Length: 94
Image 1 (tube, rainbow, N blue to C red):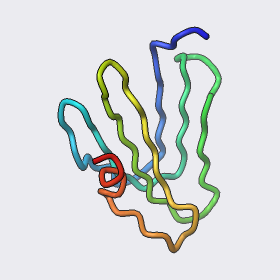
Image 2: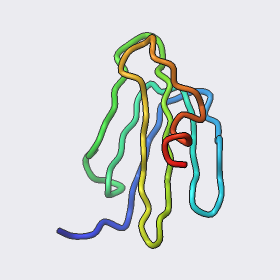
Image 3: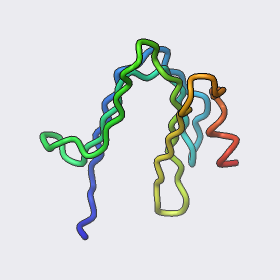
């Protein structure tokens, strides 16, 4: 399996804020409408999240570096009543 060197992320969102940033972790919290990820600039979308509700959903994501590897973590509630704070994803990776 070939190793991909590029990652292109597209967000349609509001209220994006950075909750932590250091040499091994960067985390963001936002209100999401749509999200897309692809591995080449002009290629097809590989992963997509489409919000079909009128209200934007709370969404957290983080990049975590462990040694030579970088992991992308995402978190969003399944139900509207679920609470997702801006530091929820940080609590999972500490």
